[in-house]
Structures are given as C-alpha cells and as structure tokens.
Length: 166
Figure (cartoon, rainbow, N blue to C red):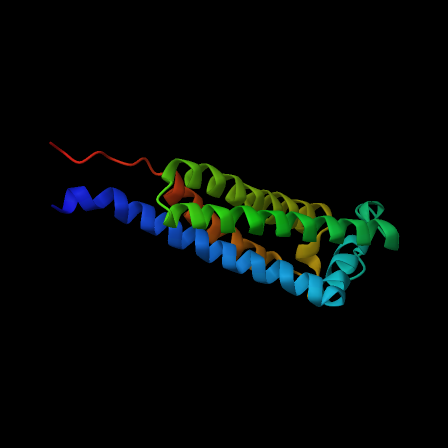
C-alpha cells in the first residue's frame, strides 16, 4: 500500500519545493520592482567594487558606469521575474498532476535560479567583482542559501518516479 503512494508523495514534495522557491523568487522580483533603489544600490556598489580592498590588480574589473550598472540590475530583475513565472506555472502543473510538464518547467525555472545565484551572484559577483571582500555589500551568504534550497528542490524534482511493485 505504501509503495503505491510513493510516486504521488514524491510529486507532492516536488510541488511544495517548487512552490516554495516560486514564492521566494516572486517576492524578490516584486520587491526589486516596487523598491527599485534598495538593491540598485547593492548592484552598483558590487560592480563598482568601491567597498573592496581596492587591490590595483583587481580594480580594473570595476564597472563604474551607471548605465551599465542599471542595465545589469534590470537584467537581474527580468531574469528573476521570468524564473518566477516559470516556477509558478510549474507549481500549478504539479497540482494539476501533469507531472511530465511540471518536471520540465520546474527544472527550467530552478536552473535559471542556479545560474543567477550560483554563476551570477556567487561566481561573478563574489569572485570576479570581489564581493567577498566587502563588509557592507556582501550577498554571498544569501546567495548560498538560495542556491542550496534551489538545488535541493532541483534534486527532488529530477528524482525518477518508481512504478509500484506488482
């Protein structure tokens, strides 16, 4: 009896994890849109590298042009918004029991966040722009938390369904 319920339990876990990440990134995107200036300052300081150790061997990487900084910030918001929409759609498909499409859409949305928080914030922000050196504008802990939760959701979403034993 418990074996026949396992596939549905796995789908429910995938739905709830996808929905949790969808809620989070929806709130992040909404916050960035409605309170544009707060995280705009964050992006500007990280890209300008103005609170790092100011090592001459690294400072050539700094992006100080406001136009480029704002373009990067708007691109982040657009990426977050698209990821949120994809994950909300994936969550809805899980609850409609359209597991194949839900798994595919959820995977795409979660991978978008892996790229944003892993490659974007941790890799590019943390290492290329030396965000780890800043006491004020260091988002590595937050990015790591999101990457871990997103990674767990991605693993659960990609777990294979097992057929009930006959």
